[in-house]
Image (tube, rainbow, N blue to C red; front, side, top):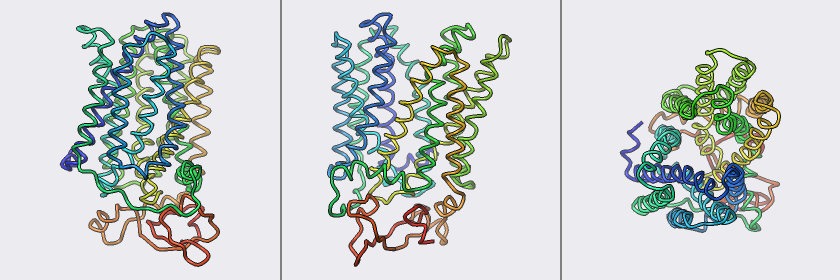
Length: 468
């Protein structure tokens, strides 16, 4: 896996991602302490509202940014987002009202909604070989998991010598360092695309979402996102309740439970590059999605038990299972997105994935908290487990095996051709008729009689089923 770090551009971009994630982790700890200073016992309400604002910004802003992203230099967009985030972090220690926190959080997350999809869409251009890109996806997953473990430990160490408000300065420093690394990286040129005549602002803002709805693999990914969000919500929201209230363990045990989730995710992320060389994405991702209801079933058994020392190790194993299954879905998702969208539409489709996946979290986060608080952990587990089961079954139905085989077809010339074509199948030229000007799939297409003509790697969806 470290072989991809020999690529100088990717090495700097990955460094920017890791440093920015660390700064974000410090801000998460500091924000909780700031909320307690401002609201006391109502700090949970403040944090819950801030989290809702974060998700709302992700859902609404990412598609808008994608609509104008092709007009902006990628370096300027990434660096500008980092500078905005650094500026917000500098201002956070000086707030004195809760509403000020909400405004700054919205600005911070708006900048993140611009940065993250643009960054994710850039990596396939930096690493066109699919094996290298798969390793990069695994490293990205590892970075997120390690941040969840490392940042709280770093924050705890820093809080022993400084006040919490200084942590925001560490966040600002992280974003500034990220911007420096982006500036120093030699970014590849963006693919030139021309939007069809008649493509307005609304058409551009919804282009990625419409691509999602038109491709079976992406429709399936939407359902898998919901299953992952159900699992992630019970871990994020209810870990402290399970450990402290249900099992009566210490605060340190909460960190251990979250660490078990991260360990399961990291173990799978490390193994996936080799696994995906021999197994199709569809099989791996759907296996992960279908394992999530199994993990919910195990959690239901633990929740219904009234005693026994076995419950704590069983909970750790269940949390690790959740992490492993989620990683099986999330790590290969970038490969599916890369194959399903023409090169010029990558930012739009990555932005749609960013927005739509967080819409699922916007549903499951409050469900985990409200049902758990009002009706008990058993009902919360049952509700989220039902969602995960229904979503996993729907994902399997939406992604037929035939579509998976066509999408993951390899170029016949072997590894050399695979490196040039990104291992995404054969490029073929074809014509579309009956699509209106402004349709997202027609970006870069040229008029041809009564239709539009273009070429791209073959994949099966509602628009291409007839091309065989």
